[in-house]
Every structure is written in C-alpha cells, then in structure tokens.
Image (cartoon, rainbow, N blue to C red):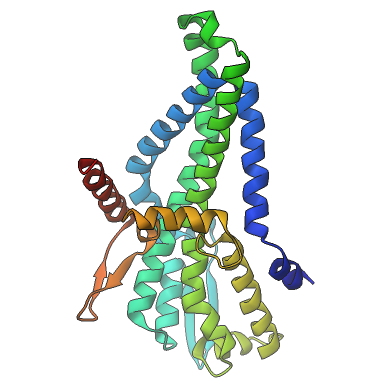
Length: 291
C-alpha cells in the first residue's frame, strides 16, 4: 500500500510545497526586517558551527558512533567473532564480505560527512531561531526606526517571499545531504540485500528469523526512502529542477557529499565535504567574475 502511494504521488514535491507555504506564512507574520535578520543569523550560525565542529563530528560518527552510546554489535559468523563499534567497522565488515572497497570508502566518508552536515544544519536552524529572537527583540528592534520594524503590507509580502525562499533553500540543502546518505546506501547495501548469495545477505539470514523475502522488502523500503529524499528523484520535480539549474551553471551540489570520485585512470581520488564546499565556492567565484 505504501509503495503504491509513493509511486502514484510525488511525495517529495508535496512535502516541499507544504513547508514552503509554512515559510510564507511565518515570513508574512514576521515581516521583512525580522525575516531578513533571521536568515542572516542562520547563515552566520551555521558557518561558525560547521567550520568548528564538522571535522570533529564527522570523525566521531565514523569511528565512535556506537561506542558513544555504550552499544556494541557483536556476533559470530563462520566461526569468526565480529564486534562493530562504529560506522567504519560496519563498512570494514562489508569489505570483508566482498563489497567493492573503493565504493565502500567513498560511501563511508560521504555518509559521515553528510550526517555531520545534516545534524549541524538542523542544530543551526533551532539555535539561530533562538539567537535571532533574542537579538532582534532586545537590541535591533530598538535601534531601527519603528517604521522599519512595524510590518506594513509591502513588508509582509516581502517577508512572505523571503520565508518561502528560506524554506525552499533549507529543504534543498537537507535533501542533498540526506539524499547523499540514502543514495550511498542504495549503491552499497541494496544490491547486497537483493542478492541472496551475497556475503551481506548470508550474514543477516544466518541469525535466523530473516529470509530472502524480508531482505527484499528491506531493500524496497530503502529505495523508497531514497526516492523521497533524493535531490535527483525521477518522481519529483521541484528540488531536482533546482539541482539541475545549479548544475547547468557548473555548480554541482551533489559533489559536496561525494566523499570522492574515480579519475580517468580508475583511481580513487578522495575528497571531504570541506573540499566540496571549497570547490563549490571557487566555481561561484568563477561565474561571478564573468558577469
């Protein structure tokens, strides 16, 4: 039933429209000045938090994610005892089960970078909302002329437009980050689950209570999640078109979370989210210099 609904309706587009309408409503209530102040604070807070904590959080997710919660996945397979303390251990396990090591390395790094980015970005949204509320109500509201602070019709309309743009940008960013996670898992995990003879499928079914049909269902749900979150989903229009528009301007948003790529010699070239952001910024500068 769920699969049929998702196949029939563009769920991602519906979510985008609802959140953009919510942003328009909030922006209209806040007015132009307060909404503009809110957006500036959001960008500033995220950049500060990202450049301070992104590397630390990404490494933490990669090497200590399970151990931080006092959780260790321990099991025995073919008389060998495995203990998984982190995402890195899980991907090493996949490698031992025959999954392509180059693809795993890229997916592991991209996954951890994307999770770090998504967590910090969501934290920034809540933190910036609190900070902007304090700064505006306690300081800036008393500095600017009251005619600027009070929301007339034009300021309400402009605030509504900014609110819609803000939430559309937020959803694109989150989709690129989370879509990178689900896309990477789709490339690595789904094919293994769909093949009953793969090492990963045999490992899971060896625990008992799980058969090939259940693995196939799990793979289907992972593909559904990827279809909803992916910024290049063929079942959506809004975000894929925005990503495509940036790509037409030689600004590939998807490269931010790639974790690496293969060069013409089929050699793995690693890259981090920071490298992707630097490349993205340099591309923006090149385009701006031609204007």
